[in-house]
Image 1 (cartoon, rainbow, N blue to C red):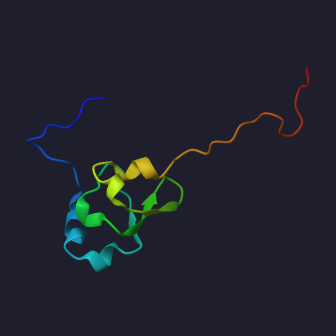
Image 2 (cartoon, rainbow, N blue to C red):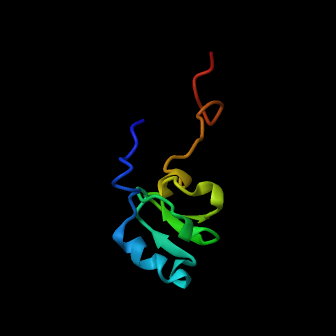
Length: 90
């Protein structure tokens, strides 16, 4: 997968750039920008990342720096339809 150019830097939404300066605003804050990169200023914060239906709580640790917020809020359920309810038996 192609990366973003180094000279451009990582993408962080302007809304999140303003919040980085005031760390107390990041506590339990809802984030809709799933495409923004996680920077070191977000470490040890608990944020709510919107997955399209409900916000998902995520604790930011050092291992998540450089990844996108959307990688930690899954948008689809992983349920299988095998052996559930009435169905064709064969």
